Image (cartoon, rainbow, N blue to C red):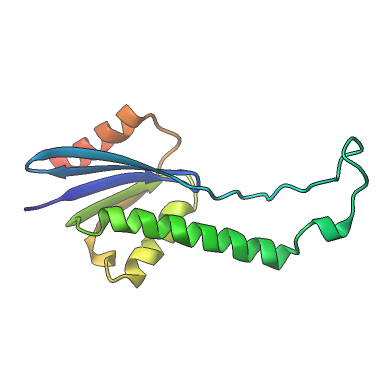
Length: 134
C-alpha cells in the first residue's frame, strides 16, 4: 500500500497528514524546544543580575540542539513508513529535517521541499491533498 505523507514543520510544531488507500490520518507533534532560554533574576523586581545565573552560550546551544534532535526523531518515527514525503514550512526546520531523513537513509522518499508561511490545519491538509492529486 502506498502512503503519501505531507508535513508542515517549524521548531515549535509539526502537522502531519498521511494519505493511504484507507483514508487520511492527521497527527500533530508539539516541540518543547525553547529558542531563547529564560534568565532568572535579571529584572530589578527579581533581584540583581548575576552572570552565574545564565548558562554559557555553548551549553545553551547543546541543550537546544539536543531538544531539536528529540523532536525530529519523533517526527521521523511518524513518517518512516511513507513512500512519498512532502515537507514545507516557514523556517530552517524543514531543511534540518531533510538532513536528518538523509541520515536515516530516507532522503530518497522526499518528493518536495517548499517554503511557506504560517498555515491553518485546513490549509495544510488542502496543500498536501493538492500536491499528491497531481
